[in-house]
Amino acid sequence: EAQVTQNPRYLITVTGKKLTVTCSQNMNHEYMSWYRQDPGLGLRQIYYSMNVEVTDKGDVPEGYKVSRKEKRNFPLILESPSPNQTSLYFCASSLTRLGTQYFGPGTRLLVL
Amino acid sequence: ILNVEQSPQSLHVQEGDSTNFTCSFPSSNFYALHWYRWETAKSPEALFVMTLNGDEKKKGRISATLNTKEGYSYLYIKGSQPEDSATYLCALGSGNTGKLIFGQGTTLQVKP
Image (cartoon, rainbow over all chains, first blue to last red; front, side):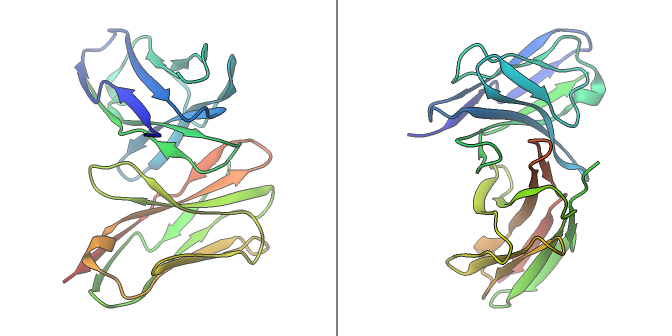
């Protein structure tokens, strides 16, 4: 089944404790993105990747890092999480640049 | 900074009513306009991706139109059903930035 998977689905952590949210897609898509969703603000793009080893900042990249060492994986790294990073995070992939986004199930993060 | 506006923010209709929402965007550097349907506790799912001025797309009772010159897209739902209750998101793909900018969404509630 074609899908985008994310882990973990739910995470509670404390300020400053490094964490990684994994994202994997099995559709051989070139493009992958991370978004965060906050009430009243809609989905905002954090980072996107056009191919292996090629990434670029979205609208809200501060406090986040990404890597794309393999085509299928695009982990999101929070080196020192802060409470303002409490949010719902979605990973997505697409076949073409600005093509249909296929979203993962979401990761709900709470930073205390 | 690109801004994508959706109206109305929320809408309550009776089963059987037809309804429509608006997505407004800056027309410069237009590349693609996406519509997604997002049900509570699920991930956004693609409805349409439109790229050409005058594009019209249809999926069942849902259809969309695009006017890139004046910077708007309409989403229509004919004969709304309770299962149409969801948040409808539009997103602008800008050829200049390679980013996808989402609107805040229109939340539709269809009462039986």
